[in-house]
Image (cartoon, rainbow, N blue to C red; front, side, top):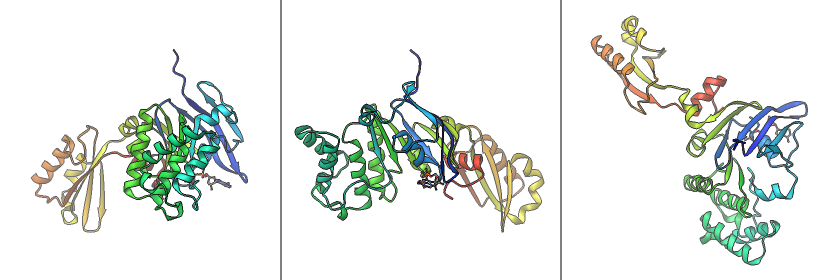
Length: 318
Ligand code: ATP
């Protein structure tokens, strides 16, 4: 059996008023994974998702599902797809239950199936106690959870989440992340777009990082993070600058910051956060020998933020 990706985009291009929003986006999403689309605002995540969902036509490029050209307009594809948009889809003047019933009917769910499914989704989203509350009285997190539930009503096997946790409280965020994982564990393939690096790192199996309409890197989370070494940063007083000549050969970077000197050492061995690898031990021994006091010591584990910085020269949070 050949390993054909569940969903592929090949060289998607899209321009708005002559300006490229997507400049050749090629992605492979595997069946039953949470695929992360990470990038700053304006990177092209929503445009990519809307094209995959069949809500927007690309200027050029193709989509494939199970290795075959994908027609996003077929009822079968529509039935298999759940799209949770950035904007809240729920009607504010209706209750949570009324919204689920309304959208469920749109999806063609009939009486007993509809009642069963709405009850399941109220439970899954943690909204059962507030099912009779109007949506305009809900917190941002509750609205997002309902939005999530609406996208799941018809039991899709591909779920697209566009910034599902913007403006939510930590509890709702944790809930949405846990439910996303649970869906993946039940075999649902999920595309998860976000500009929150920590979130993508905590929920996604594979990640594509986008910037300015392009995919700059795509790999498993583990392999992406292995491209970077952990870095330990040690601060010493600026008054000890005289010792730098003997210290420099064992550090990777030296920065002068006011009354402090920052010494950075890359640790290719996986010593974990706060761990001391051989390179750092050597530096500490040397500083001790030279009588140089250590003001602080900090180890930073590699993260996607660092990778983005390394590849684009700018911060993800810009
Ligand atoms: P965000 O999270 O801010 O939505 P994004 O990564 O999802 O960011 P897109 O919304 O896909 O990015 O936008 C990509 C680029 O296309 C941006 O420069 C955006 O301004 C532009 N763009 C998106 N939609 C339109 C539109 N309808 N008309 C004109 N330009 C658009």
